[in-house]
Structures are given as C-alpha cells and as structure tokens.
Image 1 (cartoon, helix red, strand yellow):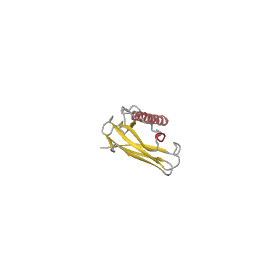
Image 2 (cartoon, one colour; image 1 turned 90 degrees about the vertical axis):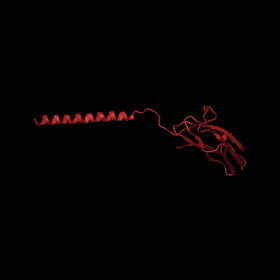
Image 3 (cartoon, helix red, strand yellow; image 1 turned 45 degrees about the vertical axis):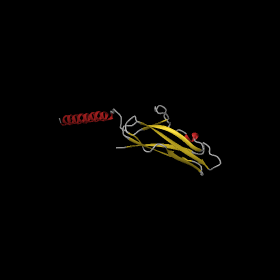
Image 4 (cartoon, one colour; image 1 turned 135 degrees about the vertical axis):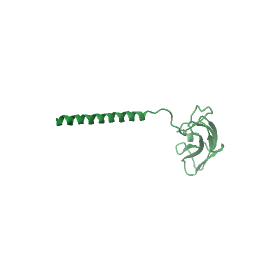
Length: 151
C-alpha cells in the first residue's frame, strides 16, 4: 500500500514538472517571434542624386586621386528612422612628405530630418606630393560619413 501511494505522488510530481517544461518552451518560442523594424540611424552614400548608384564601402578612392585638387560630389540619404546629422572625415596612410587635405564645400553637419531626405555633399581632396613617386599601392585614403541621431 505504501509503495502504491509513493508511485502516485511520484506520478503527480512528474506531471507538474512536464507541464512546467511545456510552458517554458511555449513562452520561449513566443519571445523569439519578431515583426517590424528596429529604429536606427542609417545613411546611404551615392554617386547620383536619385540614390540608385551606391558608393561601395571599400571604394578605392586612392586610384582616382591625382596631385592637386580632386573634386567629388556624393549624395547622402537618410535610410534610418531618426533625424540625422551627417559629418565627414577622412583617414588613411601615405608616404612621408605627402599631404592630403579634405575641404568640404557643403556646410557641415548636413541635417537629414526625415527618412528618405537626400543632401548633396561637395568636397575636394588635395594631394601635395613631396616624394619622387606616389603610386596607388603605397597609400590608402578612407572617407568616413558619420550619421548621428539628433533630437
């Protein structure tokens, strides 16, 4: 009789534990479901005003630079969900004796208030070479377009 009572209690404990496990699995599966977009700051950089020809992230701008002033025009588009301020910077490496300077003709920062807003940015990179030869293999220039959320 005692053994029968023990097995009955054990069966009840196993059933309660099973129900708890099933509930935990159902709750976990519920939390995994996701719909919609996460609000972000995101900008696109394009060669054309219709924003159909993106500037590749790894665009080798050093292959288009010549000694003197090199003018460029790009278009930045607010592809995120926040009002965004866009600034521009550059970095890289080049041989000693060579200078590269950035000049923007568009006042910075550029403000993109709504998703889909587009702004034109005109700038130049001026290269002064004080070494015998500057080749596309001994320097690298990176352009950075930085988007920040504004209130």
